[in-house]
Amino acid sequence: MSNSAASAYARVATTTASPRDIEAQTLLKAANKLQDAVNNADPLSEQTMQALMFNRKLWTIFLSEAMRDNNPQPIDVRQKIANISVFVLSQTAALQMSPQFDHFRPLIEINRNIAAGLSGRP
Image 1 (tube, rainbow, N blue to C red):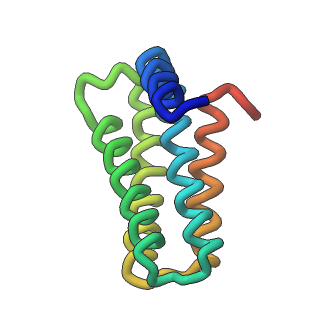
Image 2 (cartoon, helix red, strand yellow):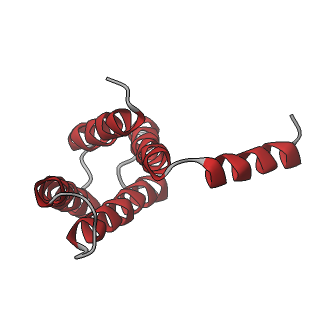
Image 3 (cartoon, rainbow, N blue to C red):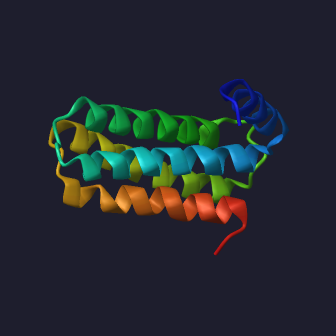
């Protein structure tokens, strides 16, 4: 497949995907970036810092959406999302200050598990 065809396919897939699918894909992207950073084996690399920043930005969006007054989700669902977001954000910030690859695993697993749930996979 040519590069332009792949790009066109990606644009169509993004415009036709449901919000849940987009969230799942983005969570998997964050998990993969974190895993790639661990595989790189340099906790102070630019790749590691970019992976952590991507994860932090993603979860900041989830937190702000959960706190939005006109969010259609029930309050208990929004509270659970907010609680997970606060945990992920605090862990990510701690790793930005002192990257320890053994502490990346919980963030990777959270992202993958929530992505699976959003995609309807166990």
